[in-house]
Length: 244
Image 1 (tube, one colour):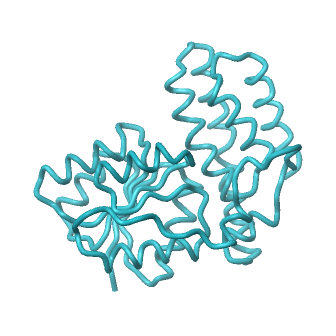
Image 2: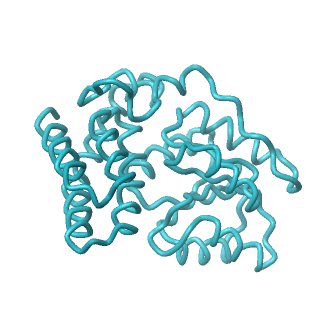
């Protein structure tokens, strides 16, 4: 049974990715920060690292560089809410064998881990070819997105209604705190902090099918100084909570 290190600070994403990886089956250690990941990697031997690109105390690229500087050559996968090719290429160029955009289906997440565990630690590999199921959970639907996209939420968990409901409950429980953090950063004019929090929220939205909120978060991420974008974002949060 492989032993994995999952580095993810967002509770919704962490819950989904941990459950999907454990079902390989695999033993999974979890870290929420660069500091925690460095400690776990130094004290345990892992067959693969699954590292979030954006963490509270640094980036996934910085974490991987520090691990490599310690002489560790464990194969690494990066996961991120970004979907732009430039962002994914930068992660692979930094030494990640694979770079995946969240949300990702449980099946494709496990397939990526299997290929990573089996891969030699050499040059980066091309990303896995998405399956049609990934299209079902494409975040931030175009047009007029619905508040809750049940089809996308079920696709993420392989159609298991109980798992989808549990993941949505976790997401809703964290949402008020996420909102307050983003509003506080906006009042301070701290665009980097806003973008960091919105990045994390967008990944969670994709896993639970919160399409309207995902779209509003993406708009605010692109223009954190925009008052109209902030108002649309807060309205989307209110609608998401009311429709739960």
